[in-house]
Image (cartoon, rainbow, N blue to C red; front, side):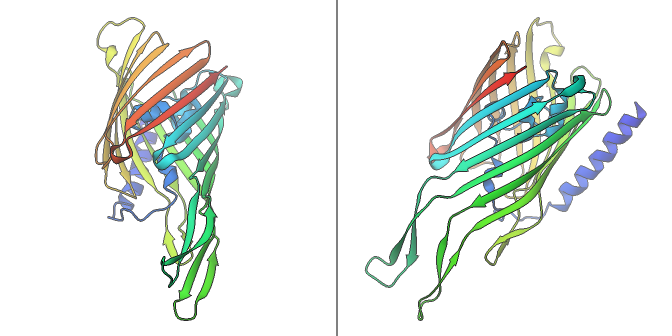
Length: 330
């Protein structure tokens, strides 16, 4: 037990040190923002308060360490996210737990983003003020390989390495207005990024706390503009409130996350999930510090190894965001 406590304290110090090292005010200075959006419907219905919530293969979108809680041999999740401005943000995750978890849990993830078609233009000294350069179809994806393992009955770790790519399409740039010298930029970048996480079961009822760091990578740049990925440091805790009362075949999860993103101000995420007989789940989440969103809602149905999750997020001037996830577990 003492060794487990030493591990979690050491890990906590490392995570806090990393979080503090990125505590400078550098908001709105990151790229590849599609990595900040979770495609998973359950996580979205919980407003992202999922650092300590067991999610099987979908844990790769939040904290890979919670994947160690997986009790089945195989899990696959397919998520469809109709993001703002008609952006399609879809994902697949799969996890495999061989030898009843003695070797840990292995997983893969794939996220694909289609931004739709954008009309390309370039400045010109004509009546319209621009020239049409043709349509542009920006896309992005992330391909990851993850692993999680319980080191003790209390302490688990997990991580993911992923290749991240974004193609914003070619762009024509005038270098000088006088000579009409034009340069073409491909705006096509790839980078390797890492996610890390831990969870610790305190031993007090179902109380769990954990930490995660997502999108850690080197600095990259388009043309002469340097930027970094949306690095996010999270610390969270959760407990089943029905631990304190008798409620057969029912659970009431309370989950709270404190989040320090590189790209905007700190946020608090609070969520509850009522689950009956492991079949029906009702979810409610709240996100602080966001301009266009705060509340989120959702439900889930799970039976015979098949699960369906839905999330609805009111999104201010963008009206709404809806996500659907389909899960198969063997």
